[in-house]
Structure formats: structure tokens, C-alpha cells
Image (tube, rainbow, N blue to C red; front, side):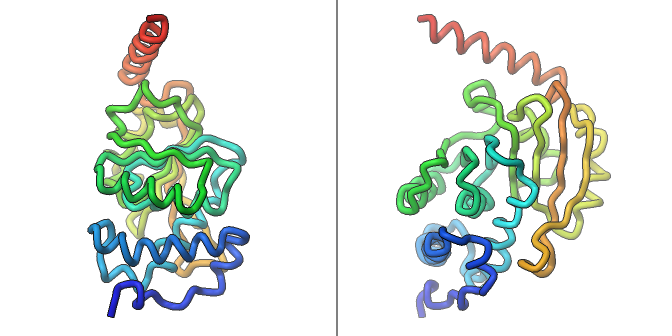
Length: 238
């Protein structure tokens, strides 16, 4: 039996969530179950729960993403949560940031196949692209790293007064409490734990929201960002 054959029936909620992009969501699930497993992007044991645990779980993040903003999905991997978010929100400009070549190859194939014109794939690490990518309104992430470490990568990519939205599990409150001091140094001014996906996923998806002030990343990253901007201007003049 192939991995694709192990895909469960598409849940009724998928039609409601993905709407006109329902067929594309089904195709993405098939790609994850086939090429995703073959290339080691997801484990074969994840195939039977692709819809509930992965696609729908990520798509409901759209409930807390503002309209018409720029988004950077850090450590996008196989495209979670960036691809499901893109399928339900064509008003967003989304960058999928991923350092590994085999993953960015897969992401580029998915973006082209599904016609996601509002999505760009960038190969690199967050700490490497700061100053090269325009700052964004929202950074998203899922299963990338503990919150304190994730924040050091994601928050410096934000515009002033932007926010990081991290999909987390049952330990979200504990992670947020443990990361409090680190988040403060990185310019966070407000934090909260949100539950999204009512009527769509069970259990609900847990999102840690970290809102920043006028200096995302804190003083250290403000200086680094300014230096990168000056370097960029010099290169353009040449």
C-alpha cells in the first residue's frame, strides 16, 4: 500500500475552510503524503492525520492574521503553516523561509503547481536574511524551536509593531512564562495565548502571540538592521 492510499477521507470541515481552494488543498495533502514522505519532509505515520493535525490545524491560524499584511513563515519545512495559510488567504503576501535545499525545492514545486502567486520561497536562515528581506507585519512558525530560541530568529524580521504567531501545543503557557525575560529583551510589549479553530479542529489550535514595539529584536538587532540597510543602499548606488 502506498502512502497516498493511506490518506484518510477528506473531512467535511476542509470544504468550509478552504472554499474555492479546496481542490488545491486536497492536492497539497496528496503531495505531502507522496513526495513529502519520500523526501523525508514528514514521517509516514503523519499521513493518516494529515488533515486534522496539519492542514486544518495550520489553516485556522488565519483567524488571527490581520488583513492584507506581509507574512514570513520561519522554518517553513514542508510548508506548514505557510501553505495552508496561503490557500485560505490570498490577501496576504507570504514568504516561506527555509534553509534546506530539498525542502525549498519541494516548496517551489508546490507553489508553482498550486498557482500561489502571492507566495515566495526563500532559502536561508532567519539570522542570515535579516536586512536582505523587507521587514514583515507577521512572522509565523510551527514546531521550529522552543519559544525563546524561536523569538531570537523571528522577532528581528518584524516591522515595528508587528507580531509573531507561533503554533504551539499543550505547553504553550509554560513556554511563554519561561521565555518572558528573553522576549522582553527582544522588544516584546504584549504576549498572549490564543485558541483558534472553534468548530473546525478538536482540540483547538494553540497560538502564542508576541507583539513588539518600535524596536523588534531589541537594541542589538536595531543596530544590525540599520547596518544591513546602509550596506544595501551602498550596493544599490553602485
